[in-house]
Image (cartoon, rainbow, N blue to C red):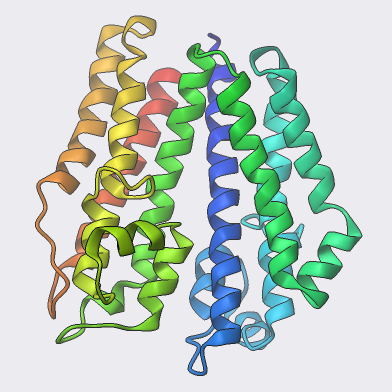
Length: 308
């Protein structure tokens, strides 16, 4: 496969995973803003996913419709859901010979959906949850279409590498935004823990696994180490290594060994850590270390496989 084609497919996987993570987080945070009397505010999400100056952030943060517009529909915000969907569609159009027509159609439908005035009106006014649900459902349709129509060829491998690298980075970012919950003295049962799990689609698994009250230590254990939780760091890194192994006979030996080493390094950093939620826990440095190792993986893919 040409390096530019592989690069384009890889970034398609990243853009679409990023979009889904952002929309799910916004949906859950909107619900929290309506249900929690002491809601913690939109500032952390605007800092993570927006491109506003301090003055603009302070002005928009108290106004939920302005927050949702900036993070979902704003064409000037390079991190908005709209921008990611547009870039994903452009990438798909550039490699139509390497994806199925059904995958292309689902992405094209996604693009036209987020441009519809009624979706924006619903999301920004009448019923934000229904508006975000409509977008999320189209994202789920895209994922299902990939699973059911794409041949398991080299293009599929790069799509999955992009997907799981982005998923690991998004999980790290949500943990960073919630870092304070895991560094407080005593057992923490903050409602923020529940919304963190909802944002990662992990609340139901948590209840089944721990069968008790939410506490910060168990939440951290699930999100970092659970091998069966699709949004845990351990799971995402395991999938990265799995799809890397499938590149072995499609790569130069030195390129493959370097990429496998870097993914294995990140996976081992997580697998052999023993973090617990407690005062003074070195969660911040740990998250920064893993993020740096994942960015090394991204750089290696760019230089060794995509000619970057």
